Image (cartoon, rainbow, N blue to C red; front, side, top):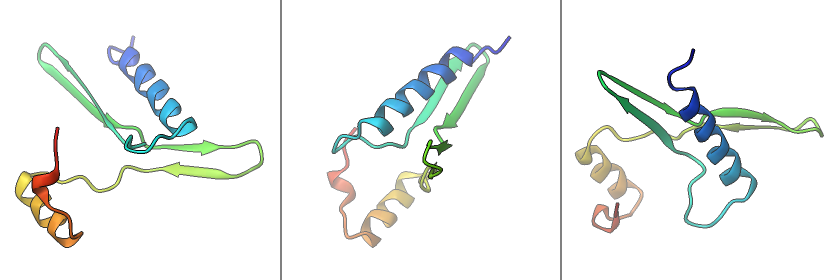
Length: 87
């Protein structure tokens, strides 16, 4: 009864994999987007992980820019160049 349940399960599995086996160049943060006829669903992989030893890890998506112009400003503040960004 959850139209996006399959996508949420897949996103959770990917999130768990990148957190359990981190690799340089692969972010532990991501957005999931599902596009259906007449509907779009978007969410991130924020979660709280409880370990058996009692430790807790909060996975929280960092602030995401809403426009290219804002991204360029942020890159300049962090002494990076927006021209280096690739998709």
